[in-house]
Amino acid sequence: MRLPSTAHTSLPWRIHELSSDFEVEDVWAFRTPGAGPDDFPAMLAAMRTAGGLARQPRPVRFLFAVRWKLGALLGWDDPEAGVDARVASLRSRLPADLREARGEDDDDMPLKAIYELGTESARELANRTVHTVMHLGWVPGPNGDHELRMAVLVKPNGWFGRLYMAAIAPFRHVIVYPALTRQWERAWRDRDELAAQHGGRGSR
Image (cartoon, rainbow, N blue to C red):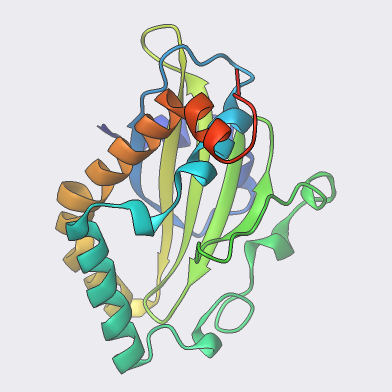
């Protein structure tokens, strides 16, 4: 479910200390029935176990394949356009108490960890179009359970970056985010079964 920007900006997240020059592009809520205040690490583990883009529906995989192909042809994703090249990583802005709180990186996930705490985490990606941050937060939901919130923060690379973000907005809202919602909400519901399949134990 899409939420207004204030659903992110009104909460005391640590990411606010690092991202004053970024814009809130999207805020999305994911239902996690039965989740408690300490279950954010369990949710992150369930999401990792559920897999990434390879397990998304075919329309989502097609959109990303087209995007990566265009990026390769036009040089949007060249290494010199990335984090620690075209732009500095937000890790360079971390206060002392967050410098050891880095989460796990995944070779299958292009966004790299900035930090990971008990109720929030942040990852980043940069290319020739934008420097973006995916912030995940754990908040009380409307039904008494806790739920996952995702905020996408962006710093477009000039006018071209702004045009690019406007062009892909319909695809994000109509195809990508709804599919991501189904995947992540299913990951929470099936977390014990998924953990067993991967040789682990249930999260609760």
